[in-house]
Image (cartoon, rainbow, N blue to C red; front, side, top):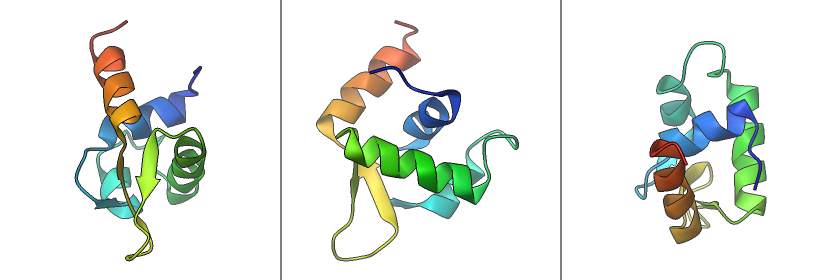
Amino acid sequence: MNLTADQRNVLLALTPEWLSSAQIAEQLPKESGNRFSVNQSLKELVKAGLAQGNSVVFGLYRLTADGTNLKEQKSAGK
């Protein structure tokens, strides 16, 4: 999957632990850290199966197994 710069930044900020969009935005560079772009990127990553939204607590997200694998590849520069 080809990721935009915003999607890549959000993917790299996500972890297997549940995080809110605000927590994710805090980890991003200022130009990528606005709430709208984070939420949009999260929606796209969820749709692609790379992130998962919490069905009990709205607004929490984490990496899926596929997202973790892709994050490791992106982090390694592949």
